[in-house]
Image 1 (spheres, rainbow, N blue to C red):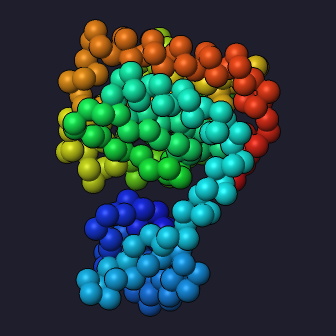
Image 2: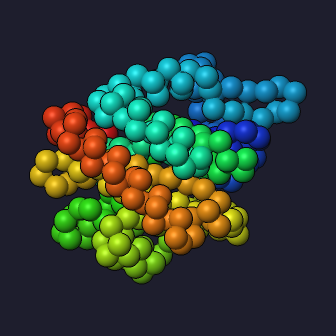
Length: 257
């Protein structure tokens, strides 16, 4: 998983063996052995001309199969299409899987500058990214504290201290939406010019099942446009909650994986 996570973060340019060893802290021999095994099963591709490894094509079929577990993914397709058309920005559907957020679907808008911060299938600790943050902020105080403690080591890869994350949670609860204008990864914290807003999609008991997440150029998420975008997200989230509550309440959305 460490290898696949590293490759997914460099899905376009790929990684050399030395890059993977550095990214995963695995020994060179161990990394090479694991890469050979992953390659045999189609989970990793190797380009002999550049000596770089890439995420394997087989992961597409596995991601598609996993997506079907989340009933809301299919049901939310019209909402994502409407939001992408109206906003012209990139829209994501994020689902809650245990203590993590998973990108289930995405729609690109028509605005000439595209901001793509998530791939379908990406999995992050709750709180990392606007959609994941909106989910975490909608949980109970006791659950938030448990997650902040248990995922502290896992969150160390990302660009948010515990204090900063608590401030973002408080903001989300006060304003009714998650907001982030910092790249989530520490090694990309200098990358600026993009921002995201998100609202939680709730089950019948009020707990979050997922979130609608919009990413765009920072200037396009400034007030008053941000308020209008948040209203659009909230309207679609409420529509999903009203029309598809039984699907939102299905246990598979809350599975521990």
